[in-house]
Length: 183
Length: 83
Image 1 (cartoon, rainbow over the protein chains, first blue to last red):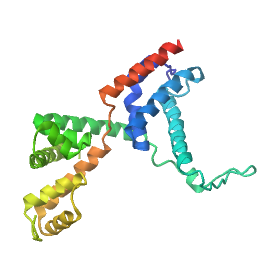
Image 2 (cartoon, each protein chain N blue to C red):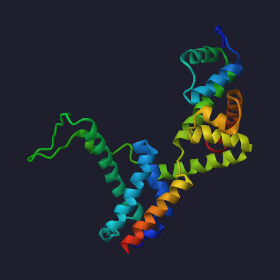
Image 3 (spheres, each protein chain N blue to C red):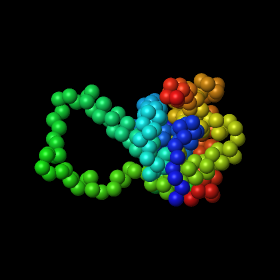
Image 4 (spheres, chains in turn cyan, red):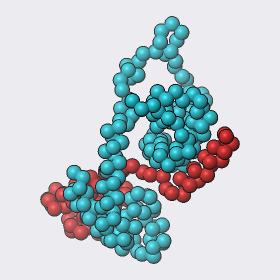
């Protein structure tokens, strides 16, 4: 097995998308997610000497990121519910062993999911490329970037009914393209 | 879309598209469902359309290039400090 090495110069190129994706599915706020990814890289840099080369760089960074995400939720929680009663089942003599903690984390993404998702991303990209440019643009703004209908209409100088016609054509084309290439 | 219960396929598809972006009203969705009871073609369209939405949500989101650059500059500052 090759020895794992660490090279922070390559981190942004190699892992920023992956870490961002990982975060966005967990915190649901892209600004927050960007901050967390950045914090993770900085924290990784600071504790580089603790890297034991037992796991790959990516796994190591993810484990830092997980902590950051937990901290993030802790922070929100302490802001909103100071009066909240917390029950600690974790007393001195008996370790907490609630059933929930013994099962695998269903939200933890496995390598297989990641590969599947990357392939899906490629398939979608290919189908988008086949669309006429106007349709692709509108579809992308509406579906991927989640712009408001009104904002798109203003920007591209079209009416709402124009927009829906374009969206309809794009969706029909995308659905049949993905049906061929993905399902 | 007036007060009629029976709507055309064209209208039904429009409502279906809006539903994918959560922009259809409850009444419109009701009309769509009535339409889907008897219209096989639109049932198929609705199904494909919903599938497409599901796939788009599942697909990985990449960082947009601008924030990636921001991230890079911020990180390179840290990197310089570190050395």
